[in-house]
Length: 321
Ligand SMILES: [Zn+2]
Image (tube, rainbow, N blue to C red):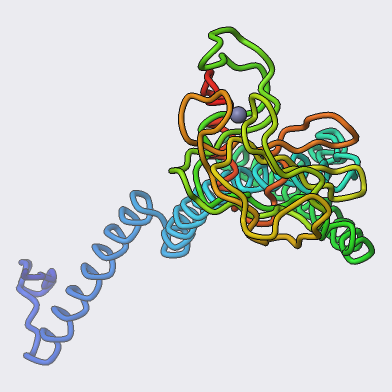
């Protein structure tokens, strides 16, 4: 670019003469100025479009937190399910069998839901706020349920320590290493072909499978007993009896009056009496009335096995008797 000045003496425009250094400084300053202007425009465009660096970092952090929240929610749902299982076992198995009052669902859930901590979260985007509210609410509920469960287990432990002798007598294991085929309650009789109370549970077993005493006690009957075939009955004291029917034979020395310990071999499975096939019919009698023996295997059934046994017991409509 050229610049001119007006020469009054000559009455005309004359080009300004720069020396080389002046011209270089001039050009560089112009370039710098353009550079600054262009960079400014570009930076302001980037900021408008993508946000400031701190905004970009915040957004990434937010995405990460949201994903962690979703992950936490999945974990909470899983914990909740496991806790339900614990509660069911606690009420159905341990507390019922030990004669402790079950803890009701109302008591277990008492005080959960609703909190001041949760009320202050409305400032966030609605879905994030919903997720946070849900997460906090459920964490509190789980925390509370776990505490109640812990108290319950401590109560059971204390009861166990105080009543070890009694608990050694209460039937608490499977009488046979086998799978249940039919449960307690009204069932179709395999031979008589009508529904009638099935006062025990049936285990599938080949003839000659070992049968064990399920708690300490005294043999109160050992021999043939009508439709039950060869039968053993143990008096465990504390109001409990157990009965093992359709045997093929007794272990040597097993007779009325003999003391047995939990786990002692007492006899062998068979198909004597009125039956459909070889199996063990097992009963528990509490204060003179037959009760569901599935509740009395807590010492050697895992929760998963219990659920599997319970499912078979509840779905199979026929007994082997
Ligand atoms: Zn049966």
